[in-house]
Length: 145
Image 1 (tube, helix red, strand yellow):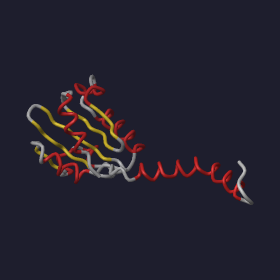
Image 2 (spheres, rainbow, N blue to C red; image 1 turned 180 degrees about the vertical axis):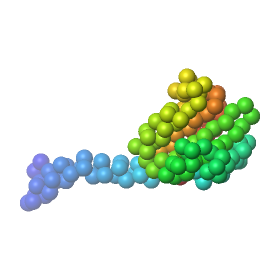
Image 3 (tube, one colour; image 1 turned 120 degrees about the vertical axis):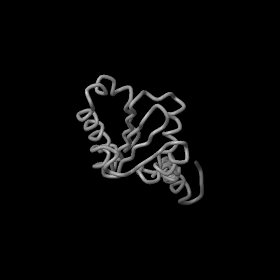
C-alpha cells in the first residue's frame, strides 16, 4: 500500500486490530441477547402459572433437593404430570443437583430418570412422566432469570 507518510503504518496496524475489534463487538452483541445468565424460581413460577400449571415455591412442597437449591425450586402440576425444577447458581451447580435428584429418586423413578430429567443452564427439570414435546417447549419457554 502506498499511502503518504505514516498512513501506511497506521493502516497495517488497523488491519491487524480489525479481527480483535470484530470479536469484541460480537462478544458484546451476544451479551445483550436478553437471555439471563441464570434462571430463577420466582420468575419461572410466575410464567408457568400463566400456562395452566399449578405452581408452588414452598420449600415444604417442592422436595428436599429443590428446596435446597441455591436459586430456589418449584413444583408445577399439570393434568397427568408433575414437574420439579431446582435452580442452581450456575451450570456446575446443575450437575450437582442432577446427581442429587438421581441419588434421592424413588426406585421406580430411577429406572427411567434419564427420560424424565433435563438440564438447561443452571436449572434441572424433573418430571414424573416423560413430557410430550409441546409440554417441554412450553416449560423451556418459561425459564426466566
